[in-house]
Length: 311
Figure 1: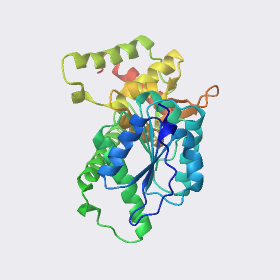
Figure 2: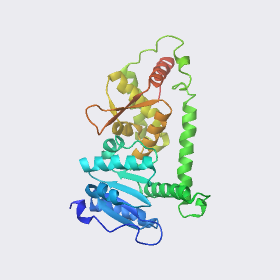
Figure 3: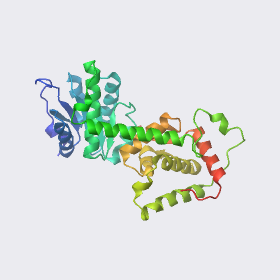
Figure 4: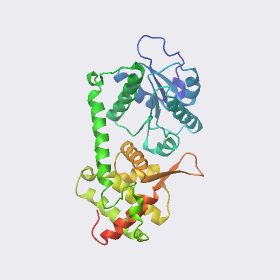
């Protein structure tokens, strides 16, 4: 059934209390998932099909949030909606969440660069609740213009969990910046004082990646979650083989949930270790590659450790 069959056209803002969460969904099932999340958080909802969402936004007075739920590729209408989400987020109109299947990573990430837009892929119910709580809490803080005691709200525990995860990522990246494998981004001259970086064989990098994957045969893979290093290895392998790596493939290489991998990609890009490059032949895809500094640091690391087992 086409999602447009359930589009609602009733005006928003006719009721007392917070305005509804506007849901743009690609199917009835997608609408149900988004509605469950929003209503469980205490919001009213109003839903439209992906195909009708842009015109609805033209008439939209206000919304507590815009939730885009995608379980299939809606093509051009989805692209236009994502472009509008990017623009509205930049203007601060209302918070936005885009939740999609992992198969939609590339077309979504190609159009959404604003860090204020919450991106979820194959998300759990907890992930979805956290995203909505974070988005709407931040909006209330801005709109109230005064201190807001978030700790008293039911979502406070989830907000603290997300904060803890962000802190953990920051701490790991701080360790990474002084580890043998990656020279600090702000000191690239250190890496270039001793001539050219050594050549690294493709086979060597592939053996290291294979050894890391073999651990999952004997232990719980979560014990060894290290997405930053896994992505650095994958991008070095691709650079040597002269292959391009789309965002979706790099998320797979990270061996963590796609939403977590995207946070790492953003953090590594902000740190100057990764570079995003648009696909000149496909506007719905973005490639990721090592920055020159990260590439040289990885090659020097392999040159230093030689044939020592690296996992």
